[in-house]
Length: 426
Image (cartoon, rainbow, N blue to C red):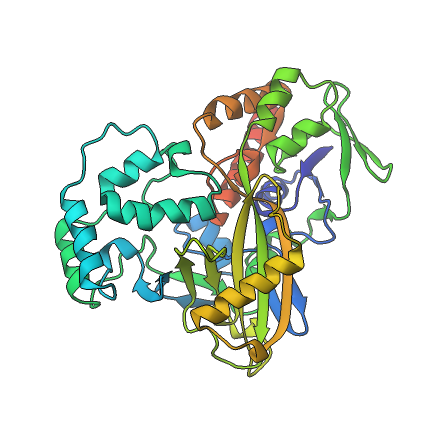
């Protein structure tokens, strides 16, 4: 029997690829529905995804699946909110709305950038953008989004995620807002109906997905798995897509060194504040980033702009993401966080209190992997142990990597192909 832990996109992709090779598998999911972070929920006719999801996949394998679902196209025109100003994204080359004095400070510091030895993300930012912009924009946002200081992050994860403009681009962006879109994706796609997880409908058909299956213990030696409700499974092969710290807690007789390494893997957790409005156009932007330290939300986006199907006719919606570290919530109740977030968004000028007809707050323990300076060492210890015990680990939290949804799908597929090569093609 082939068991797959977790029915997020990578676990489902593993099961789908095995099925394509006429190999059966069972997907065990602890939640009542499949989808993982791609899942959604509905309240009074409003549909909300778990965090923001828009596809800009380029891989043919992924798009051949996604394109089976009717979708809408969006231009990636995002914005930034900074001290009462709205700046096009990315902010570093779209400074036009700021005061002349502040633009001059940013420009002067950019010209005087220091040739530092780059030892961490803060060093990288100062080398790219100079001190003033770094101090007022990415350093603040890093602590909000990543929940750690920039100096505590390494830089391999950055890749092309942070745009590096020339001095000419910055100077132009100070003089005019007629600047080209330099976002790293040219087009964003989203299903017309059913939320983002609808992109996965073509692969879940005929899969054996068993929801409400919460694993309690894994015996790798005897290849036995026990659920919290007392159910048991024996397996020949195991593919894991649940977070590495979680699977390590479940494994019987796991070495202390491995358990300790898994406990040191750092990650963000996230509140998701979801609001529905009695007006059709509360949000004018698909999404935006918030740089003010006093406002807890890091990103705000609109499900109803992603697709009108996500809200009742004549209504609109938004969601705000607020991050905290490793499941340790703020010293506030969920309701207090919800109310404060609504107050912040009213102050920004997005809506009035009487416009809100649906409000909800919930949280996810695992949102993003944090790339601190010890991630690779600790990740290797855990993944080497799993591999030595014939456990194939896939997905964002199974590989413990910065993977978008398309990359997670490919990770799941590759995990299945690895299992086939190692087991069935001998």
